[in-house]
Length: 222
Image (tube, rainbow, N blue to C red):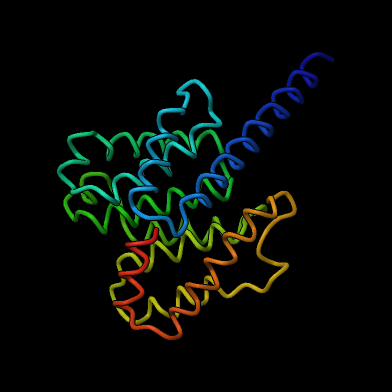
């Protein structure tokens, strides 16, 4: 009789840890959207300073915070700080700790896109590719519990390094979700409102601006 009880307790603890990790990640992600680079860096450095390596619920925020920092750094500086290897280790651990969790898969997708955008050599060494990034994001969007923030993160990854005009149609399609279908019930209202506002803003820019202008806005604001 003890084994089923122990299993139930472990499953409950895993679910609670996953819930805390996603909640912390959502709060961090929403807080960075549209902020200046300096403010995003302040938020990311604070998040990394507060991350506990022995607390699995810190894992997703750690990955996202590293992502914010490296987007603002030259490649050589990121390499000296060992962020590429640290982020690769973190996403590998997150994949094991939170299998099937939409935000864990989305962060893996964003990692692949960002490594490819920043360095072809780094992508080769770390095994990053746009194809893998696209697959991770597709799985993240389709997974139960996914929310509009995952789609916004995908659009940001696509628009940070557009390779052809098809990116406009892809990003528009990713963001084209009707209200009421964009978030699970456990997402806080403030988070939902923030990601909806930025999704609407990106959709409007994709309709009315050139892809070069959209890319410049994405790199400046996200």
